[in-house]
Amino acid sequence: MKVKICGITSYKDAMDAISAGVDALGFVFYEKSPRYISPLDAKQIISKLPPFVEKVALFVNVDAQIINSFMQESGCTLAQLHFEVPSSVYEQLFVPYIKVIRAKNAQDILNFSDEYRLIDAYCESYGGEGKRLNLEWFKNIDCSKIILAGGLDSLNVESLKSYGFYGVDVSSGVELSKGVKDKNKVKDFITNAK
Image (cartoon, rainbow, N blue to C red; front, side, top):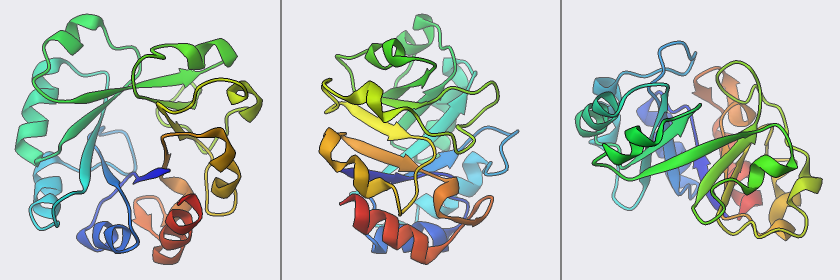
């Protein structure tokens, strides 16, 4: 499985994840998040990173102009779009993007099934709040284009291997405190996922 570590706020955390074999790093451009980072601060980290690591910019309810601008300013390579995004926004993007589904029920996980997508547990506020999805929903469906998020940590990620998910996304499950990663938890998470 591919692994994304989200909520990166420091160069050290980014490099610890890269050294442990991460595939993608997430930068949260949502000001209400405790893991928020400005595009300029993200650029200062990204400009020093080695190649072949995806840099994902997380957006919540913003227009295409902001997404395009922040992507260019930060050096991120993929936009992750949360909440209900009108189709007109996708049409105006100049950057690669991935849709996020906040699943309330088993039917929700089938949305956009022909596309790679990130599926997180539904909750009213931003972010998954560490909630886990019901894994029964994923039995007997093609999970090869699904990146699973929500309530994951180094202890439970290994149990997902049999489902065939494309990848997993973790933030709070590998933290010392909000926005500060635990190097050992990051390493264990990546090792157990792969």
